[in-house]
Length: 41
Image (tube, rainbow, N blue to C red):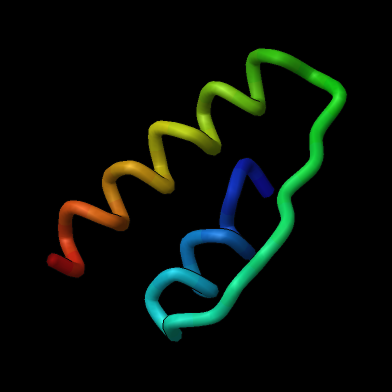
């Protein structure tokens, strides 16, 4: 939940599409994805 698939995809250098209809969860996912990007670079 909350961007987990996207985070794993980024770690594995895979493309992904993330969709959510709840703005709160979307914002959580965005933060997690940004954090994952910073850790991998």
